[in-house]
Image (cartoon, rainbow, N blue to C red; front, side, top):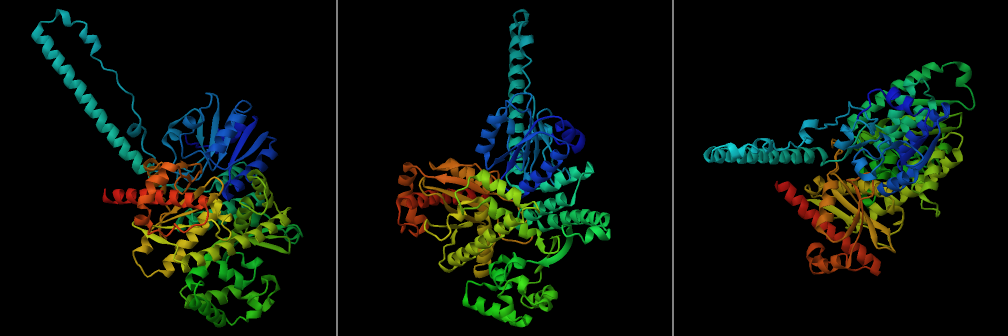
Length: 605
């Protein structure tokens, strides 16, 4: 059931209760969690925080806490499945779900007692009406009339039985037609996955309604929104609309704290709306390294080619920037150059076809020294959340990412920025390697790429967010480099080793590259159909159901696949060193062939 009054129907209900807070492992959910924690601390609400990485973690966390808690708050998880069917809770358990994943499961929408949805209804939800998908089965009403059959003449009884059969057949036919319409309606509603309004924005609006919103909360909401833009989860129009909403809140807070004493305080916090450059981490890097490792500029210049490198040198020369300046840290550049750097870059970018080099975003100053863009925070927090530097658990990484959002933990934030730089360089090198060695193969209605075991930094891409970022970067680079117009309109499936010892891979699928795309993803159903058609063991354990599956192969799948492998892929993946890699590659190839058949069938329909 959708909540209409978030204060009365959610916050006032949990204020005097113990709450279990189940939070998904993504940046928007971490920001939403941070906002809710501050609100709970203000009102002394007792809660237990449990990070959950997937459906298995969610089920395990619920089983461990269902005896101690009646109220559960789920952040960015739970809306797109039948939660009651999956968890089998007691009748008194209540779930408050603040989730950006769409579509929302229809059972969650029409459950009035246990499911409470903290979701904006002005989003384009398109939920089918109740009568279209639910109906009560009517009992046959003929049994009462049949008791008088003995007193009726035989001819009349025969006519009565014929009429009853005809009515029963008509009811069965009507029921089949209704069920057919219901399947079509649900297929149209559930076939695409997409994202709605940021969870952090939703909870910031709650804080605003409670008149407890602070600049820190506003900044976390901005980071949650920027996460959706950085990871390409929402359309450009949706992003611009939500940025306008956040801009109004920023103006309100800045106007409220305009007194001179506060503005000059050494520990003050100032948020500003800006048209800044689409250069990743450029204020914490050198300008040259930022241009080379930003998806936007790297793909436009095609920096994996010699011509691209030459074009970059021409671009720097056109701006009139000395190489000594652009290769040193940004904060060490001459003040005269930094003063009008954005205008200079924008002017030269227009000459090279990069007319949208600047984008609407937000920045923050912590005191006099520390300045960050919202996208800097997203990359740093994501790097901490999926860190592979140490053998820390997923919960430890989650808590580090949560701590990095506090302005009192700037050391941890700077550590996250350093990790983000390493990740971006690894992505850039992997993209260049895949393009130059032709690892992207056209498989009928889509493209695919497989990262072999032994690929540099392959461990980093066993993490979902890192692999999706690589996948989007790679598809954009391929579209800019290929001359095949048809391939520019195709989606991309990509896989990387997840666990070498178990012989499993993680697979993602993204829609075609387009600035005007509606960001809806069809791969959820495709992966499900592929799993049904193969003997490979698949685990759909990610909350983004349409973009990620974990896959491992059985011996039967290998025997089935071997005769057709060369026909399917030309034998290109047979030259692999270890047995585990062969297992991964063959299982992935088999699912690829199933996906191919499924797409062809859908398009013919």
